[in-house]
Length: 118
Image 1 (cartoon, rainbow, N blue to C red):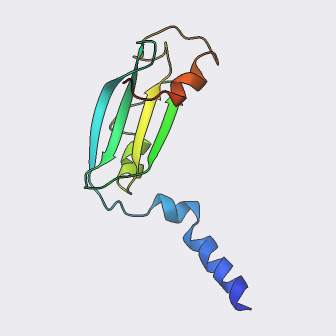
Image 2: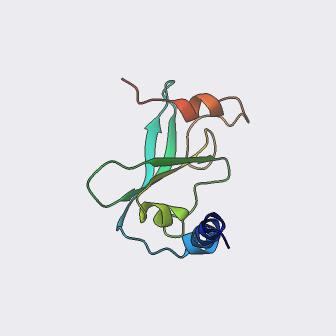
C-alpha cells in the first residue's frame, strides 16, 4: 500500500463521525440561557449561549431555528463549547421565547446577519 493511500485511510478513521462524537471535551462550559438579542428594529430574539470557560477568542457557531432552541442541559452546546467553539442557539423571530411576528423566510436573512446596534 502506498504512503498516500495509507495516510488517507488513517485520516478517514481518525476523522470518522464516531471518533469526533466521542472525543473528550477539554474545556468546562458556561451556559447563558434566554439571552435577549436586540435586532435593528428593536425586536428581541432569545438565545441560549454556550461558551468555553477559558481565556481567548473562539469561533462561533450560530444556529437559528423556528423549532425551539432546546434545553440548555441536553444540547449540542456542551459538545461544541467543550471543544473550543462558542455556540449560539436562537429562536427565530416570533417563535419560542423570541419577540416579533413569525413570517417564514421574511426576516430570517436580516436577523441572521444583524450586527450589534450602535
